[in-house]
Every structure is written in structure tokens, then in C-alpha cells.
Length: 347
Image (cartoon, rainbow, N blue to C red; front, top):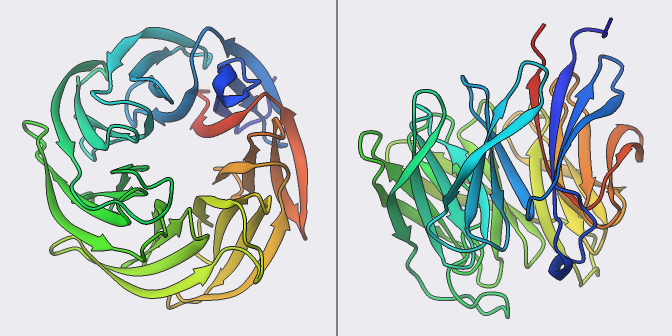
């Protein structure tokens, strides 16, 4: 009999030659109470299932296909296995992130290459319908060579669910979008202009304070901002480097807070590290430790059962856990992993 509680981990991996990828698609793992991972299904013939999202109430998983223009939906069987239901257009190109609204009636997708955010209808059973609205993000391009137009990189809902925050790497802005829950329309409620050339990529909200932390991919920084829930306004309070002084190459990528809010983690590609910041009771970032994280730590998250930091090593072709000191223990080998989501296994 399996030890309880156990979890299901869904791992999206890049697959294409253009990305020099070695992934086989979408992997399903059973993670038991000891933290042991075991592959129970491999869904192949998928192009770059690069970011994943679970429905909160229905047995559904959604995957966007990076560098392409589709989002796929899957039914989750009682044993955790996936069955593909179909594909819908993302109404843009190179989708990089997706998230469900608080009501789960709409799936929002950030289309990096085409510079827009799309809302797609979701039925009560979790099935995807037609797109409802596509919003192009306005602004002037930043000074970096990678900033040739709008490049939204994430959909990050505020804790109160009122706004979808969208860091735009190309415009050096973070947009606060209001979503109409009846018709799916998206409107810009507010925006924050960040340091030119910073390239905001991802952000995370503090679990108890009206604060958020934004990763600057291009200048390798983390910016602390105050959040005003009345209008979606963000106000910058501090900026910190995610790499040691003098390290001039690479890019920052993922960001995650420990469940208790006492640690902030940011992954660094090139430096191949995770910056671990102490977080004060006021949300101010304190001392920094750099954890050697393996080759190209693109995606990071924490385990649901114990809050351990996980890193997906895109070019190291493995997933590893930080459990003590500065050591990461490899959990499983898999080609080009770039996203991990967890769901508690049904008894």
C-alpha cells in the first residue's frame, strides 16, 4: 500500500530542436510521503508543454505550448493519468504563462511574442471554449536587445483576486488588468513603470502583507513593491540584485516565497544559482545566500507537503530539492524540465 499522504507531480518539458531540448513531453509522477518520485505516465507527441495550470475544482490540467500558439486541456483520471481533450488557440504566439481567474470561469494566457493577453472561456466542467477577449499591451520598448516590443511573461493574480498582474519584459512595465467575470473582457486598471532595461518577468505576493516582489530578468534584480488593492497600483520601495557583485552575465528567471513568507528565492541562469533572501516581518529583504542550483535553473517552486524548494534544471535535465545547507539532492532525471505543478492524490 502507498504511504499517505502522496501527491501527483505534473512536469512540463521542452521538446523542440530549436530549443536544443531533450524533453519527451509531459511527465506524471507519484510522490510518496518519503519524497520519492516515480514516473507513472509519459505523455509524448507534445510540442513544448512549457507551462501548466490545474483547475481548482475539476479534474483538468491545461498546458500552453511555448513557441507555438496553442493551449491543450487534459482530463485527469482517478489514478492521476492524463487524457488529452483537445487544443484551442491562444490568440497569440509563444504563450509563456496561464492562470485561471478566481471563479475559474476564464483562463488568461500571456502571449509573449505577439504582446497580448487573451481570455478563454472555461465551462463548469473545466472544458475550454472560445476566446472571449484579446488585449494588446501598449507602451514603448525598453533599451535591451530583447525588448523589441511588448513581451508579457506571467499572469499573477492578486491575493484578493481583483487584478491580474502582468509583468511585461519588453516594455519594462507591470500591468494591473481587471477581468470582467461575465464576459471575459480585459481592461488595464493601472501600471507600474520599472527601471529601463530591467525586463520584469515574474512576481509573487507576500502571504500576509500588501507587498509583492518582481524579478527583473535582464538586469538580474528583485524589486519590492507595495500593492494598493483599491486601484491595483504598485509602488516601488526597494531594489536588490539577485547575483553577487561583479557577476555581469546571465538572467534571472523564477521567483517563489516559502509558505511562511520568511524566505524569498530567485533563480539565476548563467550564474546557475538560487538567491535566497531572508524576509523580515515587515517584508523587507535581508541577507542573501547563493545556492548552487545546477545547469540553467529556469523554474522553481516549493513542495506542498513540506515546503522544500525545488529547482527544474532546464539544461541539467533533472529536478532537485534543497533540503539542507547549500545542497540540492537530485530527485529525478528528465529532459529539459521547465514547469512543475502538484495535486494531492485521491485516496
